[in-house]
Image 1 (cartoon, rainbow, N blue to C red):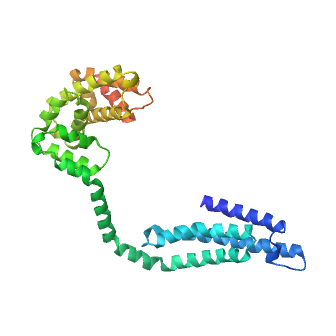
Image 2: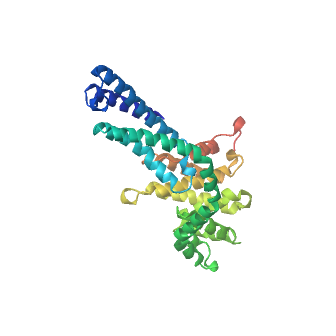
Length: 316
């Protein structure tokens, strides 16, 4: 709306200067040139305002909820009519100027009168559009989903980690997570991975499972996860130069620690054996925040709460 008002003001001012300069005298000739130009100012201003506000009314009919090709046509016309007004004035073409005003009027009226009927047609075509969208999405993600389907069930957790760490498609993430959660020994496998080269990936997946099923998260696995988080944080702290930690790894560790702390109903009841690991991670987060990356506010808040004395000053 603000842009339309500015455009209307710019058009009106430009037309007033053009009329005052005599550039449009041929559009309407009267005995007194000032009467002629005064009438031209009124008519051209009226035409410019009509075009601007009719195009605004056209945009308000939500043509994105109309069947094709109407959205494309209206999208073009709502930009074309003001351009035709400017072109008519620039080339001194009264016919083009009048055509733009009349076209904007007709298009706006037609769009408003026919919107209900066309919208009903749009809604009736919704199942077809959804089916086409689903088919297009299936074709788009087919290579990844096929690769996931080819991972043998007996291969265990590790081959599925790559699909969980992908940002797209989300369908692969959910299918890989479902397969891991269906494994009876998933926690044991992930615990073993915490001690290997994919410790951060395993910690991240464990945190995802813990977020979905906090009551099913074994205490032994939680202890191992804290130890791994502290070790990963120390390793990231020691990295410099070309080996500096990528932002996505920092983000994954922040997210994992968030879950590990939030999963406890009272963070200040953390056992003393975990407070050392938590302090290590908190110190790392404060340092990481100075390296062009800021850990989540939630992580810092939660860990401050976890390390603070409990209400009443009781020792944890």
